[in-house]
Image (cartoon, rainbow, N blue to C red; front, side, top):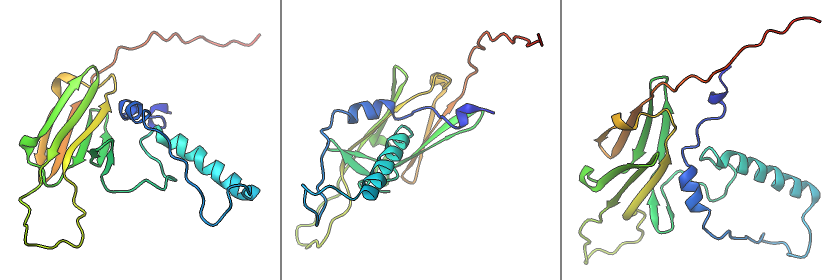
Length: 188
């Protein structure tokens, strides 16, 4: 059994290190007094949620976090577009959704086993006479920082951009085999 399928490479290691600089926020529960302890079952439920949240955070997931959403988010004033990571035996694929961005506004850099995808989504000309009731579209700089696995061939990285989707492919190179010696077990 290949254990690497169950414990994949942590692509978000560098991003999480940067996010660790943020100050945690404590939220108060609504409708309950702060001095009254929660019911033991409720405390148990919260502890299990926190356990799974910490376990999945290493994979870039946080299923029980109330802040988790499926739309791009802001971190330290920088837009973080959503992405998909995939792997086959021959290559890794990173697909990033950045609608409304021209390919000339996207920059990819590899420095010390770290892939940085950055750019800027520019706002179109704003109409002064139009009254907006709601504005949900985001503009500004975006950035994603991915830690590359050691078997990613950094010299052969290719990137394509089509209809607001950036696809980065990295071939996998063969790693040197470790010296493993099988020892025969005999009956005494």
